[in-house]
Every structure is written in C-alpha cells, then in structure tokens.
Image (cartoon, rainbow, N blue to C red; front, side):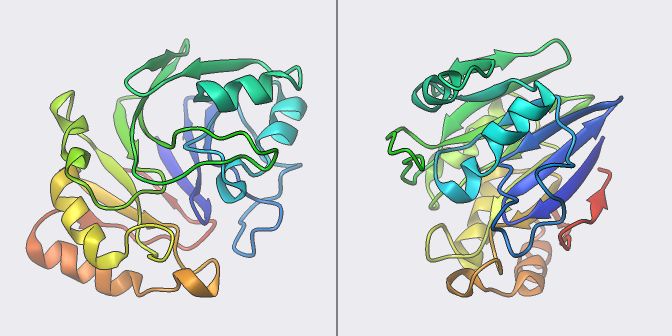
Length: 224
C-alpha cells in the first residue's frame, strides 16, 4: 500500500487500484498537493466535521461516486446531498468490499461548515495487508493505547502541530501509547498557529525507541 500525504491532515491510501481519501481538505489548503477536481477516490473517510477535514468531501464524492464514511450526524448531513454514506458511531466498523474502518475516540470538538455538531473520531483503517490508525484531531489521552489491542498498528498518522491538537511533545507520548511500527506526522505547518519542528519530533520519538518516524512533504508517498 502507498500512503500519499496531501497536506495538513489529508491522505490518499492506494492499493490494488483503489484509493481511500482521508479528510480531503484541498481547496483553501495552502499546503495541498492535489486539487479536488483531479484526485481519485473509491471511498472517503472523515475524522470529524471541521472545515479543514470535511474539506472537499462532498464535491469529490459527487464527482467520483465514492461513498463517505463518517460518524452518524455528519453522514446524515452529507447523505442529504444525494451521496452514498456509511454511518457509524464510536466503536463501530464500516465494512467495504475491500477495506474496513473502525471509529475510535478522539478528544477534540466537531462542527461541520453547515453547523452540524457531532463527535470527533480516530480511524483504524484495514486496507490491503496493513492497519493504519489516523488519530484525527486529538489531545493526548490514555485511550490512544487501546486500538493496538485489537490488532497491531502498522502506521499511525498523527497530529503534532499544537494549538488545536496535541503538540509535538505530547505526540511523543502518543507514539508510545499507540505502539505503531511507523508514525507519519500531520496537522502542522499549514498555518502559523500550528507551525512546529517535525524533525525534532522525529528525533524525540526515535531516540526513545517508540517508532520509526517518516516525515513527508505534501505530495510525497511512503510505502510501509
């Protein structure tokens, strides 16, 4: 599987001719590595409703026909657009023919651009032969250690920018809790309030022996 960083917290996971988009905030994203009218999608997964994650999900879904997997309230809103949705709640698993995604807790807030209030989530994605944990926007909290008990985490996609989420120092602790083989940092440097030193985060995590950290520039691809 290839993991392509699209900037901010957006990723494209690609395997066997299928593409899963996570939090496709592209339009208005100064770090976007693709445009909403060109990106492929066979499924779109959302962690929560804030505009920098909800992003272009509706436009991409309408263009590609991709279903949107989201927590129940957000799925209900998007479904009103005539888009195929898979609604789940925390602890629930959305089963696709070729992948699955389980919603896990994240400590944050969530309101869509239309004003729908919902609960934020992390996403444990099983795709190909890999298990990818996108933590979503979250503060540091102990339950980040729980998903690995359901199955080993190959790669964690982890926010480190601070201000709106945990910062790079708390993210070091999160890396220990999650227990993934590899960590790809995200949600940093997009805007001034979340600028941080990703290389220092990498050094701290690797020196502690918690995981290998792969720092990607927007547009770069990593194959775990």
